[in-house]
Image 1: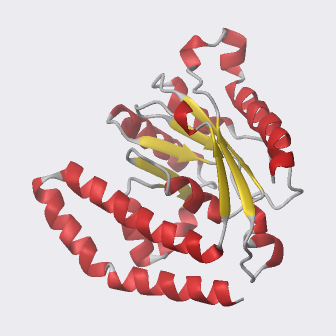
Image 2 (image 1 turned 60 degrees about the vertical axis):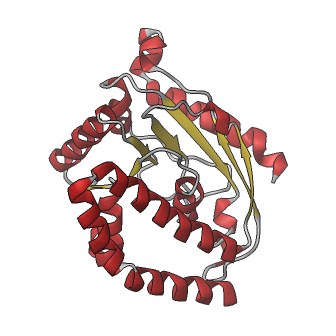
Length: 244
C-alpha cells in the first residue's frame, strides 16, 4: 500500500509541476517542433522510469535489437496499466500510443499525451474510430511510430490468455507497409491489478519479436494478419512463462 500511495503522490505532483513545462515546450515547438517532441518524450519517460523504480519491478527484456530504426507499428498484449509505462519508457523514437477516448478527461495528462502524438479511440463510434486509424497512418508516414493493444481493452482473464485481436489496428501497417513489431508481456498484472490497491515488487518479461513487413507475407497470411500476430504473441508469452 505504501508504494501505491507514493506513486499517486508523485503522479499528482508531476502533473501539477509540469504545467509550466508544457508552456515552455509549446514555445520551443514554435521554433523547432522536433526538439519539442524529443524533449517531451524524454520528460515523460523520466517520470515513467521514476514510477517503475517505485514499484520495484524487475524487468527482463528480450529482442530489443529487433526494433528497426524506422517508424513501426508496435502490437502488444495488454494486462496492466503498467504495460504503457514499461514499454513507453523504452521507446527510442517518437511513438504515439492509441488510448481509449475516456482518457481525454484527465486534463494535464491529456495535454502530455497529445504532445506525445497519442490518439484517442472512440470504440463506440466506427466512423470516429476510422478517423483515428487514418491519423495514425499519417503519423507513420511522418516518421512517428504507433503502439496499440488490439485486444481493445485490458485483459483481466488468466495470465496466459489473450482476447481476440481487432483487425482495424493492422490497417496502420497494411496501408503504409511499415513493420509490425510484436510486444509480448508476461506477469505485468502482478504489479498492481492482481492485488489492487497494493503495488508489489515483481518480475516481468518483455519480448520484442522480429519485425513483420506486411508486403512480404503471402496473400492469405496478410488477409488474416491480426490472427498471425496474435498467434506469435500467444506462443511467446507461453514460452516466456517459465522465465517469470
